[in-house]
Image (cartoon, rainbow, N blue to C red; front, top):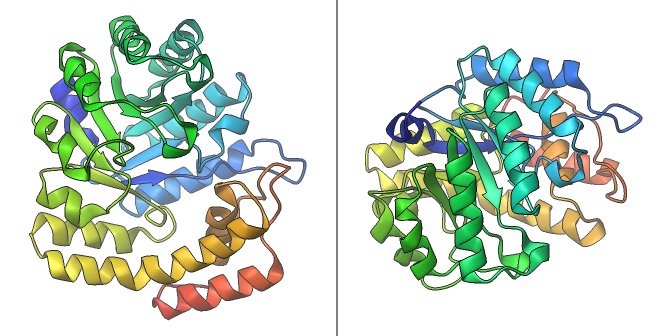
Length: 307
């Protein structure tokens, strides 16, 4: 698959899916296969969305080197070539990242979301060497990502120098440095995936997709948001976004004050919608009965089919 073919797949609402755990906090592969089939059946298919496995909200950093490829294998097999599967990788040095990337390539991922090796405290030249070496070593796509909380910025001039790296196909953008609009000068070369202002701002500026909390929870909502953006019905899209994001962000903030872990509220929503996938691994706490009741009320208020 060449870079243009991969770029056509990294579009729309990006589903950062949870990793199911059983009662002993072991990866539940049977549940992951069931959920993947449900996501595909409900529209998270090639050209409309992306299933992103083992990113931060999917608790990827909590998985072992053996668990990561096994989870990817389960997801790819269950998707049966109907969905675009991306694997989240991060924080490792160049050699180990390349090893993980080659394994993911062999297992059927169409691309990788890759965070620089933050614990190496890389300079901008280090980051360029890291992504250059990774791009040269594999034949699938790379979506470059840097998170605000990790204090490893990538500056615009560094992104500009990445245009010659064949397999860098996308940038997940939250304006860690500079202005939000800056990255869109590169939107002809890279797919720009919003991680900050939302799908409307992204689409208006020429972006290609966005990170969200809910497309894997209730696919029709986010698929409709993106459809409205594609039709340039921006006011309607923003109103639909706000109707869901404002109440949910309050709950995410409330849960975050009590316990860390990006997967806690996500898994709460999955359970509230009748698709439980276990609790997050310690030290993150489980969602409480009170929080679950509040979540169910909020989701019912959206008109979603809460059992």
